[in-house]
Length: 202
Picture 1 (cartoon, rainbow, N blue to C red):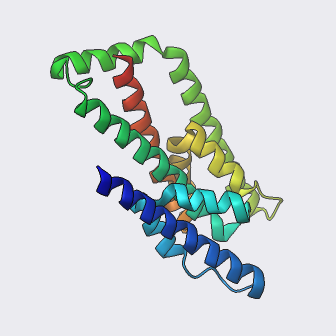
Picture 2: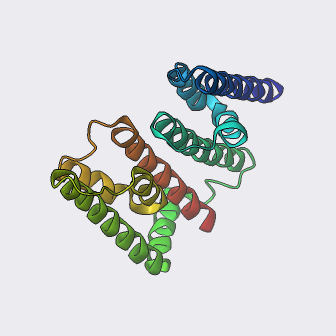
């Protein structure tokens, strides 16, 4: 366990330092951020808190060079927190008591007991899909576009499936890494959170 905490401290210090170096270089020279891929790898390996802390302390801009990095870091933070909580439950014997049948029936019961949540989620996905389609229409007609951060935020807060479907249905944002990889990451994150929520409700 000591090794685990030392590893987390080291990888987060690395993430924080790389982001800070990139921020200084970008601020002083106006050059491109060159360590973004290393920062992303560090976030995946457990350094998401360090990346987000550096972003909050120094940058706080949701511009194009930052968007995928921040989306990835937030998704990784949520996934890693969910994984740590699941591991804690398993180690303490608070998971797996009901068996497979009990777990599946509990998941079904969870779905039935939260119908209003599912309706809201369906509505969020429908609105997000419409926003993606509207932005595509505006792009074709060369009109004022919907800001990308709006599309990303709507996807992050529940509309990721609608966003992904609309992306491929109208061929919009499919070549942008913050959408083509970011939105599937959001779907994975939201699925993990829903499963963990359902397990905790058993």
